[in-house]
Figure (cartoon, rainbow, N blue to C red):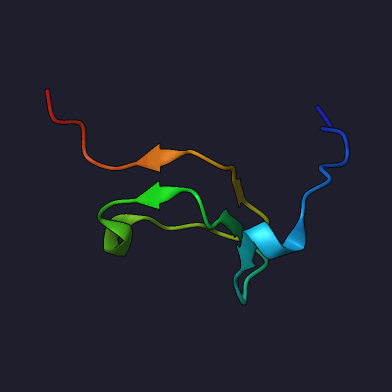
Length: 53
């Protein structure tokens, strides 16, 4: 399944050396345990972290 083209404001995202795009408004907790293999896009207001119930 092919996804459509994603348009974004380049000033709101950080592009890594491997081509990942991470929003400046996202929250990544435990980032030493997160592996992105390239061409991933983490959108605005996304929270990645441990599940604490």
